[in-house]
Image (cartoon, rainbow over all chains, first blue to last red):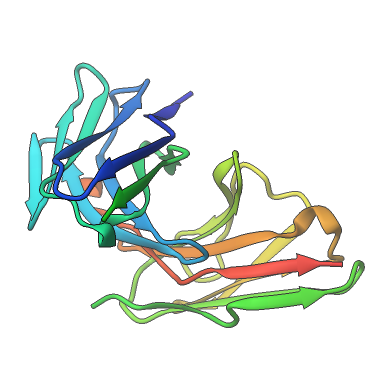
Length: 110
Length: 116
Protein backbone atom coordinates (compact mmCIF):
# COMPACT_ATOMS: atom_id res chain seq x y z
CA UNK A 1 0.00 0.00 0.00
CA UNK A 2 1.43 3.37 -1.03
CA UNK A 3 2.34 5.76 1.77
CA UNK A 4 3.48 9.33 1.24
CA UNK A 5 5.36 11.17 3.97
CA UNK A 6 6.37 14.80 4.21
CA UNK A 7 9.02 15.96 6.64
CA UNK A 8 9.16 18.37 8.37
CA UNK A 9 5.54 18.99 9.25
CA UNK A 10 6.30 22.67 9.82
CA UNK A 11 9.12 25.00 8.87
CA UNK A 12 9.86 28.63 9.67
CA UNK A 13 12.55 30.53 7.76
CA UNK A 14 13.64 34.16 7.33
CA UNK A 15 12.82 35.90 4.07
CA UNK A 16 15.36 35.36 1.30
CA UNK A 17 16.42 31.87 2.29
CA UNK A 18 16.50 29.01 -0.18
CA UNK A 19 14.70 25.98 1.18
CA UNK A 20 13.91 22.37 0.39
CA UNK A 21 10.71 20.50 1.18
CA UNK A 22 10.80 16.72 1.18
CA UNK A 23 8.31 14.09 0.03
CA UNK A 24 8.90 10.33 0.36
CA UNK A 25 6.82 7.51 -1.09
CA UNK A 26 7.03 3.78 -0.46
CA UNK A 27 5.96 2.35 -3.84
CA UNK A 28 8.04 3.48 -6.81
CA UNK A 29 5.39 2.34 -9.31
CA UNK A 30 3.91 5.80 -9.79
CA UNK A 31 2.77 7.59 -12.93
CA UNK A 32 3.62 11.05 -11.68
CA UNK A 33 4.14 13.20 -8.62
CA UNK A 34 2.39 16.52 -8.15
CA UNK A 35 3.19 19.38 -5.77
CA UNK A 36 0.45 21.66 -4.48
CA UNK A 37 0.15 24.78 -2.41
CA UNK A 38 -2.76 25.32 -0.01
CA UNK A 39 -3.55 28.60 1.71
CA UNK A 40 -5.61 28.48 4.93
CA UNK A 41 -9.24 27.59 4.26
CA UNK A 42 -8.70 27.31 0.52
CA UNK A 43 -8.42 24.59 -2.09
CA UNK A 44 -5.19 23.15 -3.50
CA UNK A 45 -3.31 24.98 -6.24
CA UNK A 46 -1.17 22.87 -8.54
CA UNK A 47 2.45 24.02 -8.61
CA UNK A 48 4.38 21.38 -10.54
CA UNK A 49 3.76 17.98 -12.09
CA UNK A 50 6.68 15.60 -12.61
CA UNK A 51 6.00 12.66 -14.87
CA UNK A 52 7.54 9.32 -13.91
CA UNK A 53 10.02 9.54 -16.80
CA UNK A 54 11.24 12.99 -15.76
CA UNK A 55 13.85 13.97 -13.19
CA UNK A 56 12.78 17.55 -12.53
CA UNK A 57 10.45 20.40 -13.41
CA UNK A 58 10.89 24.13 -12.93
CA UNK A 59 8.48 27.03 -12.66
CA UNK A 60 9.87 30.42 -11.70
CA UNK A 61 11.51 30.15 -8.26
CA UNK A 62 10.28 26.58 -7.83
CA UNK A 63 12.12 23.44 -8.82
CA UNK A 64 10.84 19.95 -8.13
CA UNK A 65 12.90 16.79 -8.51
CA UNK A 66 11.91 13.14 -8.63
CA UNK A 67 14.01 10.06 -7.82
CA UNK A 68 11.77 7.03 -8.20
CA UNK A 69 14.45 4.53 -7.26
CA UNK A 70 14.86 6.09 -3.82
CA UNK A 71 11.20 7.02 -3.44
CA UNK A 72 11.86 10.72 -3.00
CA UNK A 73 10.83 14.06 -4.39
CA UNK A 74 11.98 17.49 -3.30
CA UNK A 75 10.54 20.95 -3.86
CA UNK A 76 13.18 23.67 -3.90
CA UNK A 77 12.05 27.25 -3.31
CA UNK A 78 14.60 29.91 -4.14
CA UNK A 79 14.76 33.30 -2.43
CA UNK A 80 11.71 32.70 -0.25
CA UNK A 81 9.19 35.50 0.31
CA UNK A 82 6.47 36.04 2.94
CA UNK A 83 3.92 35.35 0.19
CA UNK A 84 5.27 31.80 -0.02
CA UNK A 85 3.82 31.09 3.43
CA UNK A 86 1.34 28.23 2.97
CA UNK A 87 1.04 24.47 3.33
CA UNK A 88 2.76 22.46 0.62
CA UNK A 89 1.47 19.00 -0.26
CA UNK A 90 2.77 16.32 -2.57
CA UNK A 91 0.67 13.60 -4.17
CA UNK A 92 1.75 10.43 -5.97
CA UNK A 93 -0.44 8.96 -8.72
CA UNK A 94 -0.57 5.19 -8.44
CA UNK A 95 -2.61 2.61 -10.34
CA UNK A 96 -6.02 3.87 -9.29
CA UNK A 97 -5.72 7.01 -7.28
CA UNK A 98 -3.62 9.79 -5.84
CA UNK A 99 -2.03 9.38 -2.43
CA UNK A 100 -1.34 12.61 -0.58
CA UNK A 101 1.19 13.49 2.05
CA UNK A 102 -0.03 15.44 5.09
CA UNK A 103 1.91 18.51 4.06
CA UNK A 104 4.63 20.87 5.26
CA UNK A 105 3.39 24.14 6.77
CA UNK A 106 5.83 26.85 5.72
CA UNK A 107 6.13 30.26 7.31
CA UNK A 108 8.48 32.82 5.76
CA UNK A 109 9.27 35.65 8.17
CA UNK A 110 9.69 39.20 6.87
CA UNK B 1 -7.12 27.75 -17.39
CA UNK B 2 -8.89 24.80 -15.85
CA UNK B 3 -11.63 25.89 -13.55
CA UNK B 4 -13.25 23.74 -10.91
CA UNK B 5 -16.04 25.38 -8.96
CA UNK B 6 -17.94 24.23 -5.90
CA UNK B 7 -21.46 25.34 -5.08
CA UNK B 8 -20.76 26.76 -1.64
CA UNK B 9 -17.72 27.95 0.30
CA UNK B 10 -19.42 27.52 3.68
CA UNK B 11 -22.40 25.42 4.74
CA UNK B 12 -24.03 24.91 8.11
CA UNK B 13 -26.48 22.03 8.43
CA UNK B 14 -28.24 20.18 11.20
CA UNK B 15 -27.83 16.54 12.13
CA UNK B 16 -30.07 14.33 10.01
CA UNK B 17 -30.41 16.76 7.09
CA UNK B 18 -29.74 15.65 3.54
CA UNK B 19 -26.85 17.68 2.13
CA UNK B 20 -25.85 18.21 -1.49
CA UNK B 21 -22.40 19.44 -2.47
CA UNK B 22 -21.94 20.23 -6.14
CA UNK B 23 -18.81 20.46 -8.24
CA UNK B 24 -18.50 21.67 -11.82
CA UNK B 25 -15.44 21.62 -14.08
CA UNK B 26 -15.09 23.36 -17.43
CA UNK B 27 -12.27 21.40 -19.05
CA UNK B 28 -14.15 18.36 -20.31
CA UNK B 29 -12.30 16.14 -17.83
CA UNK B 30 -13.36 12.52 -17.59
CA UNK B 31 -12.23 11.91 -14.01
CA UNK B 32 -13.69 13.67 -10.99
CA UNK B 33 -12.99 13.15 -7.29
CA UNK B 34 -14.41 14.04 -3.90
CA UNK B 35 -12.07 14.28 -0.89
CA UNK B 36 -12.46 15.38 2.67
CA UNK B 37 -9.64 17.05 4.54
CA UNK B 38 -9.27 16.96 8.30
CA UNK B 39 -6.42 18.19 10.51
CA UNK B 40 -3.86 15.47 11.09
CA UNK B 41 -5.53 13.09 8.62
CA UNK B 42 -4.76 14.83 5.34
CA UNK B 43 -6.88 14.31 2.25
CA UNK B 44 -8.97 11.16 2.11
CA UNK B 45 -10.76 9.98 -1.02
CA UNK B 46 -14.52 9.54 -0.63
CA UNK B 47 -15.63 8.67 -4.18
CA UNK B 48 -14.41 9.13 -7.71
CA UNK B 49 -15.95 8.91 -11.15
CA UNK B 50 -14.23 8.16 -14.44
CA UNK B 51 -17.23 8.72 -16.68
CA UNK B 52 -20.84 9.85 -16.71
CA UNK B 53 -23.00 7.63 -14.49
CA UNK B 54 -19.91 5.74 -13.33
CA UNK B 55 -18.67 5.84 -9.74
CA UNK B 56 -16.13 4.06 -7.60
CA UNK B 57 -15.78 4.01 -3.83
CA UNK B 58 -12.72 5.58 -2.35
CA UNK B 59 -11.26 4.98 1.08
CA UNK B 60 -14.10 6.39 3.20
CA UNK B 61 -17.44 6.10 1.31
CA UNK B 62 -19.61 5.29 4.32
CA UNK B 63 -22.36 7.85 4.86
CA UNK B 64 -21.89 9.39 1.40
CA UNK B 65 -23.21 8.83 -2.10
CA UNK B 66 -22.48 10.53 -5.41
CA UNK B 67 -24.16 11.36 -8.68
CA UNK B 68 -22.71 12.11 -12.07
CA UNK B 69 -25.45 12.71 -14.63
CA UNK B 70 -23.41 15.09 -16.79
CA UNK B 71 -19.72 15.01 -17.58
CA UNK B 72 -18.98 18.42 -16.08
CA UNK B 73 -20.87 17.93 -12.80
CA UNK B 74 -20.16 15.62 -9.86
CA UNK B 75 -22.36 15.80 -6.77
CA UNK B 76 -21.63 14.51 -3.28
CA UNK B 77 -24.63 13.63 -1.14
CA UNK B 78 -24.75 13.19 2.60
CA UNK B 79 -27.94 11.20 3.07
CA UNK B 80 -28.28 12.01 6.77
CA UNK B 81 -25.63 14.42 7.98
CA UNK B 82 -23.84 13.65 11.22
CA UNK B 83 -21.47 15.76 13.33
CA UNK B 84 -18.51 13.58 12.35
CA UNK B 85 -19.01 14.72 8.77
CA UNK B 86 -18.00 18.25 9.72
CA UNK B 87 -15.01 18.81 7.46
CA UNK B 88 -13.52 20.59 4.46
CA UNK B 89 -14.74 18.95 1.24
CA UNK B 90 -12.62 19.25 -1.87
CA UNK B 91 -13.53 18.38 -5.43
CA UNK B 92 -10.93 17.69 -8.12
CA UNK B 93 -10.79 16.70 -11.77
CA UNK B 94 -8.26 15.29 -14.22
CA UNK B 95 -8.18 14.30 -17.85
CA UNK B 96 -8.00 10.63 -18.78
CA UNK B 97 -5.49 10.41 -21.60
CA UNK B 98 -3.82 7.16 -22.59
CA UNK B 99 -0.61 8.27 -20.88
CA UNK B 100 -1.53 8.66 -17.22
CA UNK B 101 1.72 10.39 -16.42
CA UNK B 102 0.16 13.54 -17.86
CA UNK B 103 -2.83 13.42 -15.50
CA UNK B 104 -2.71 16.65 -13.53
CA UNK B 105 -5.23 17.09 -10.77
CA UNK B 106 -7.06 20.43 -10.44
CA UNK B 107 -8.98 21.37 -7.32
CA UNK B 108 -11.96 23.51 -6.50
CA UNK B 109 -11.90 26.10 -3.68
CA UNK B 110 -13.42 23.73 -1.14
CA UNK B 111 -16.62 23.70 0.93
CA UNK B 112 -16.34 24.04 4.68
CA UNK B 113 -19.27 22.03 6.05
CA UNK B 114 -20.33 22.28 9.66
CA UNK B 115 -22.94 19.84 10.96
CA UNK B 116 -24.56 20.93 14.24
